[in-house]
Amino acid sequence: MRRIGLVVALLLLWVGLGAAGTAQAGPLGDRLAQFPDWQSKPLLPSARGDLVYPDWFEGTWNVTTTLVDLVAPLAPEITTPGFEGNRQYLNQPVPFQARFVATLPNRFGGLPLPPSLLGKPQVVADRAFNGLNLAKAYLDKPHQKSPVLAVKVDPKNPNRQITLLRDESEDSVLGAKELVSTVVARGVETPSPSEFITTEVFQQEFLGSPQIYFNTVETSTAYQLHPDELPRITADQVTAIYLSPQDPDYFAAGDRPVALYRYRLEFIPEPGTD
Figure (tube, helix red, strand yellow):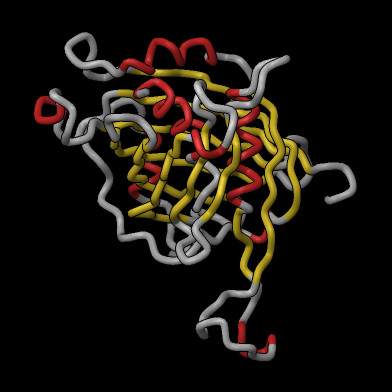
């Protein structure tokens, strides 16, 4: 169970679930530069509303994500069961499609107001589309039923995402297991018009087994726009896994990550959507 939870955690983090403020490069960029010397969780404000991306994200993209490094900072004393299993993805490019859409901000409780009062459209991730495509890219096997049944986003909370996974002993959604990921904290930096850095901290619950499993996951991503090149967008991303209070090694680990995964992402516009 823990291995499934950790693998799926790695799949869903980057897609983005408070409106993004504007800031200069600072602690988030510095934190990425210090990889893998991460000694604590980042100090971030609570996540409110949807994560807003720069306008240059809008559209449908063919994305390739590649795990380029993985570190267990507290090994051999403390490791996670999923860590060694995730070595199979090292330097293995994984392609999938992602989509980012422009939407008018909902600031007036859904009341029908003219566009002039709603403000400028904001670009956000199509989290259900992106999460489903990425999960299937990692977990689907040839000639087998997909273990990923659906990815849903809470209509009342864009920071809460649910992934339904097939129970191996069942063929219906009634036997599904659920991975519930909720973004609880977020920070954003914009060092320049062509750079965008975001860090999010997730609380994750893996439901559907006799023992409910919790953990905390952080993802930090630095995006770079290349307007006249392909790939059009590249990104450096680090995912950190932290133990939950129910883990017997929780107090020994403290706020230090027990697993770190570094990815390289490349975005190429889908033909006809550029």
